Length: 452
Ligand code: GAP
Image 1 (cartoon, rainbow, N blue to C red):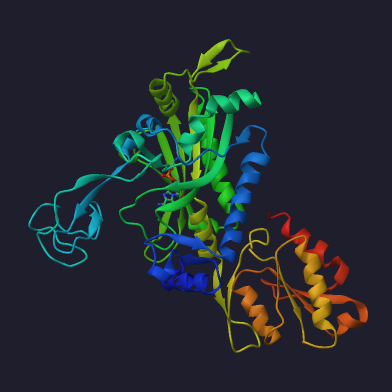
Image 2 (cartoon, rainbow, N blue to C red):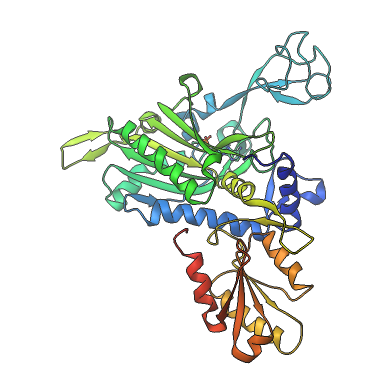
C-alpha cells in the first residue's frame, strides 16, 4: 500500500505550485527546514485543528481548552527536565563542518575513532566525539542579554498546561478525571530536520493532558490510546497505513511510565513514522513543578475526603504531520475513462478539503458568468469557494481535483432555462442536477455529514 518513493517529491512540488506550502524566506535562499503555509495549506491545517478541537474539547464535558504563552518562566524548563535532559548526542565532521546525530544510521564507525566516516564529505577519521546538544531555542527577555534574562521557546505545549492545572480546575470546578487541551506552536532545534514538513524546527502541537487519580492511570492510558487511533481513522487515513508502536522501557522519555506512538506509513524512505504520542506521565510533572515553585499542586477530592497529585495521561499530536499524512494518503494519479489525459486527485473528506466547491460557467457568455458569480457569492457565506471561468471545463475540473475540492458546480445552457446546475462529485465523477437555490444545502449536508 505504500506510495512509490517519488510521491513525496511530487507532493512537495504540488504543494508549492498550488499554494499549500512554501519554503520560508525563499527569496533569500530559504530558511532550513522552516515552512510557510499558503492559502490552501492554512485552510487544510485549520480544518485539522478545528476537527481536533471539536472532538477533544467541544464534544466532551470533561475537557477544557487553554491557550498558554510560548514564553514561560525559565524555571519551568528546569523543573520539567528539559534544561538537563532534552538533549541529542551531536557529532561534527572536522573537515566539512557538517553536524549529525551520533546515532544517525548513515554514520559509519564509532565517533571519535579513525574508522568513523562522514556521511556528507566521505572523509574518514574526521568525526569527533559525541557531545550533548540541547534542543531548546534560547533567547533573552528584556533589553539585557545576560544569563538572568534567558528564556526558551517552548519545545512542547504541555508545560503551559501543567502550570495552569489548578487555575483551570478551580475556575471550571472540574473534578478529576478531567483534561485540558491546547493547540499551539512549539520549537525544537532539531539536529537533523527533514522529510519536508515531517521534522521541522518550528511546528504545531495539539496536546491534551488528562488528570486522573493515581492507580487509574493505566486504564485511562489504554482508553486514550484506542480513542486517538480511532480519531486518525476517522480523518480517513487508511487503516492499513496506521499502527501502534509501544515504546520499550529503554526508549521512554524521562517523564514517561508508558508510551505508545501512533505511526502512519508515509511510504518512500520515511515509511512508518510517528504522528502522535500517547504518554502516561505519572505524577512527574506536577511533582516537579510543586517542588520547584514551592506552590502546592494537589487536587482536593472533597467528596471522598482525599488529596493527591493527579497522574497525567497525555495525547500529543502534530497537526503538520497529520496534514502531511492526509496529503500522502489522499494523493492518487488516475486514468479517466474516455479521456487520454489522466488526473491527479487528492481525496480528502469534504470537511477537511481547503476548498469545498468550484463554481464554473460553462462558457463566458449568455449570462452564465453573471449567474455563476452570484451563486459563488452566495455559497461563500457558507464555505470556501473557488470561481473559475478560464480554460476548458475539463481542465477546470482537473485543477480542483488536484487540490482536493470535493464538488464542482457548473452553470450551463439549461441553467438559464430552469435555474438548475450540475454538481460533479470529485471521487465518483457522477453529476447531479440540482436547483441553484438548493446547492448550498446540498453541499453543506455532505460537508457536515456522517464522515465529518
Ligand atoms: N508533550 C509531549 C511531546 O511533545 P513528542 O512525541 O515529542 O511529545 C508530540 O511530540 C508530537 O509533536 C509528535 O507526535 C509529532 O506529531 C509532533 N512533533 C514533534 N517534533 C516535531 C518536529 N520536529 N516537527 C514536526 N512535528 C513534531
